[in-house]
Length: 86
Image (cartoon, rainbow, N blue to C red; front, side, top):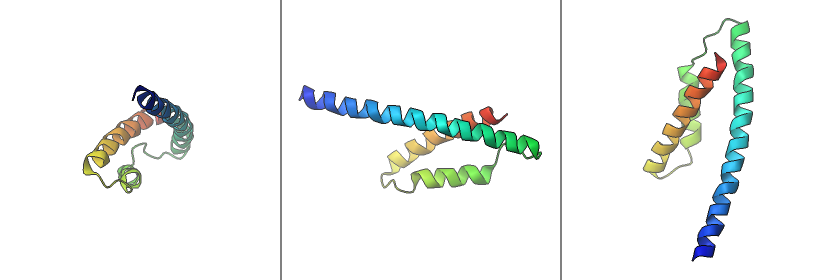
């Protein structure tokens, strides 16, 4: 049983590494978008876009508690990305 638990933890560690790399790429894109918005005098916060992102990242979840958890996680990601654009 411990082998199985360790194997699952290794899988989680691998997934976490992938998520971390993808978040780095997301922040790079967000900073470029922030520069674009500054250049053209656009507001940083875009509520329509935020709702679309939340819809996109939760559309494949059937379990409501998981869907709510992902919404929460992405709400934090979005807020941090907004900070990075300023």
